[in-house]
Image (cartoon, rainbow over all chains, first blue to last red; front, side, top):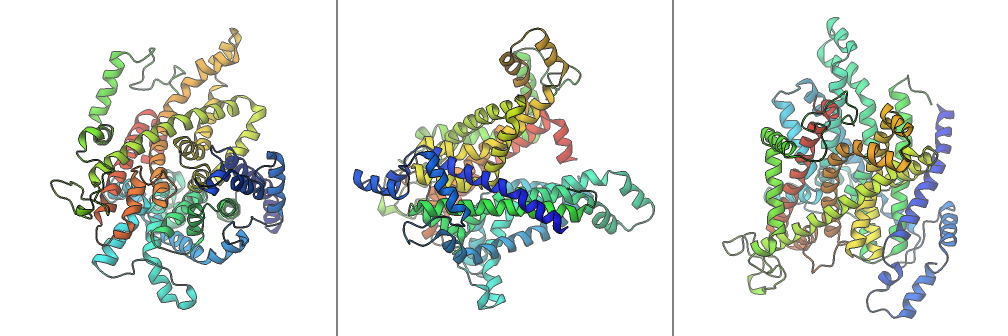
Length: 313
Length: 302
C-alpha cells in the first residue's frame, strides 16, 4: 500500500504541471488586456505600462511561463497587488471556513444521497422512486443562490430558527459552529445530493439485476444486508468516481455559497480579488483549487483499491 | 452512434437524406406523444418567446429609474414589482432572459465546434491523442466557474470574453464524447471501404465519421446550454459579469441582495425564471437522450 501511495504521488506531478500550464495559457489566451483592466478606465498609458512590467506581462510568453513555473515549484503562488501579501498566506488564513463548509456539505450529501439512491433503486418505479427522481431533476435546475435565499427566507426570516448569515469558528464551540453552518451546507449540498442520488440509483439498478444478488436472496440473506452489504459495495466504484469528478462542482458551489452567507473563506477571497482586480490572487486561488482537485482524485484512486480488492495498479 | 451502420435502425431517425416532411412529421409525433417532452418543449418555447419578444411584451423600459416607486411588490402595473431604483422587474427579467438565452446559444455553438475539432483530431490522429487528452484532463481539473471568473475579470466583460470563458470549460467533455464516437466508428468496415475506394481523410471524416457524432452532440448541446445559462447567472451574481447597466438574471439577483428581507421578490422572480429555464432545458435534454440514445437511457432510467 505504501509503495502504491508513493507511486501515485509521483504520477501526480506531471498532472500538476499540466494543470498549471493550462491555467497559465488560458488566462493569457483570453481576449482582453489584463493590465488595462487592472488599471481601470481612467488610467494613463504610463500607469498601464507600469502594471504590465510589474506583472512581467511585457515579457515574451515563454519567459513569463518560465517565471510563473519557477515560482510555483518553490511553492510561491504569487503576491497580492492590493495587500502585498503572499497568495499562499492569504489562502491558508481563509482555509478553515471553506474546509468546514465543504466537509459538512459532503457529509450531508453522503448521509442523504446514498440511502435515497439505494431505496430509489429498490423501489424502482414506485412512488418513492418517482418523487426522488423528480426532486433530483428539480434540484439540478434551481441555482445554488436561489436555493440559499429560499432557505434563508423560510428558516431565518419566517421561522426565525437559524441565523441569516455569517460564520463562527470552531474555536468558539461546536454548537454555534454547526448552528451557523446548517443553511450554507444545505445550500451547497443540494446539487450534490441530486447528483449522487442519481448515480447511486443507476449503479444500484445495474447491480440488483446481477446473479449474485439473486443468489444472496435465494439463500435467505435479509434484504437490508443484500442491499447494503452485497449490492452497495459493488455499486460503490461509480459513486466514488462521480464524487471525485464533481469536486469541481463543489468548489464552484463553495464560491457562490460563501458569497450568499458572507462566509470569510477562500471562495470569498477569489470574489473579492476579482472585484478588486487583484490578478495574482485570482490566478493563485485557481491553481490552489485545481491542485485540490488533483489530490482528491489521487485519494480516490487509492480508495478504489480499498473498496475493490480486484483493482491493482 | 448506430444510425450509420445499417444493422441497428434507430426509430424516428430512419436513413433517408436530409430532413424530409415525413421525418419532420415523425419528430412532431414523438414530441406530442411523450408527455415530459411536450411539457418541457412548451415551457421552453414560452420562455424563449417572451424573452425574444421582450421589447414588445415589456411595457416599461428596463433601465428607466423611478425612485418614487422603488421596492414595490407585484401589482397590475408592475407584474413582478420594482427594484431598489424603481425599475420594472418584469421587463428586467425578460431582458435578462434574452441575454442569457443568446449567450447560451453562442456558447453552445462555439463549444460544440471546439469540442468537435479537438475530439475528431484526438480520436482520428492517434499520435496527437495522448497529448490532447492530457490537456483536456488539465482543463477538467480546473473548476470551470473559477476559470470563467478569472478570464472575465482579466479580459473585461465583453461578449467575446464571456463566450470564451464559459465555452472553454465545456470543451473537454464534448471532446471526450466525440473522441469515443470516432474511436468506435473508425474501425467500422464502411470506413475502411471508403478508404479503399480512394476517399481522402477529410472526406471520410466529414462524410462518414461526423454524422455519427450528431445524436450524442444534440443531447450534449442541451446540457451545455443549461450550464451556460447557469454560469452566466453566477458570474452576474458574483459581480464578474456584464456591467451593471446591462440587465442579466444574475446581476438583478445580486442587486436585490441588500433588500432581500424587505423585498424578497427581487431575488425570487428572476430566480424562478432562471430555474424554470434551466429545468425546461434539462427535462428536454433528458427526454431527447431517452429517444436518441436508448442504451444510455436504460442505464440511468432502468
